[in-house]
Image (tube, rainbow, N blue to C red; front, side, top):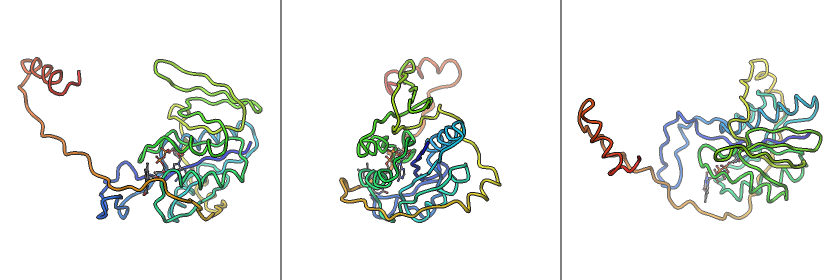
Length: 249
Ligand SMILES: Cc1cc2nc3c(=O)[nH]c(=O)nc-3n(C[C@H](O)[C@H](O)[C@H](O)COP(=O)(O)OP(=O)(O)OC[C@H]3O[C@@H](n4cnc5c(N)ncnc54)[C@H](O)[C@@H]3O)c2cc1C
């Protein structure tokens, strides 16, 4: 089985983000980058399917700047066979990234293309659907379990109050949720091996932008805390405030 996993680098959640002077982007000079956590579930699932089948390949693909090679090497350290780096130093909007990914995927003809259900920074939850639509393939997002038997695919998704089971045929595009598996930690010997695995560099052909980011702004500062009393006597007033003022209960 030929499997592609699309991964995005995102700022480490421990990084303190600062806005750049232009007011439309993040100052990236101090940012530590990681593989978006949902993408790690997608990589792990691709590796497990390959291991179970005893054959096939897992290719990781990213669209991003030259420095995103680091995240591709990490994925190769987890066990992916090779990588494609669609290189661009430009800030692209989602439709442009989807075009770049689709161009590469179109020429590869994978049986299965895996995404994370959403990136943990921009959180658009749209890339898998955009790419699937451009490839003319079915898409299911937020998958909690996956079984492939020949060309039959069985998927479970967590939905409000239960689980939905879907059945379809390869090729499909799927977005991984966190209940899918537990991603492995790369072993030192695999990290060393990953240094020799091939990364193909492809020039991005993003086409026209659909949107310009005109501003990004921080959330409003939190109002200062208020002490409403002490001990059990304060409970009644606290509940009243939570109900009538904050309207959270
Ligand atoms: C209107 C608009 C304008 C934007 N303009 C800019 C801009 O000027 N500069 C800028 O830096 N960003 C910009 N962005 C953000 C950027 O386009 C998105 O981060 C990017 O398109 C990915 O979308 P997402 O993070 O919402 O991914 P989601 O749809 O939430 O991601 C789902 C999955 O898609 C895959 N994926 C996402 N991105 C990639 C990628 N690059 N390579 C491989 N796989 C990927 C991963 O598997 C990920 O888990 C803009 C976003 C919007 C909505």
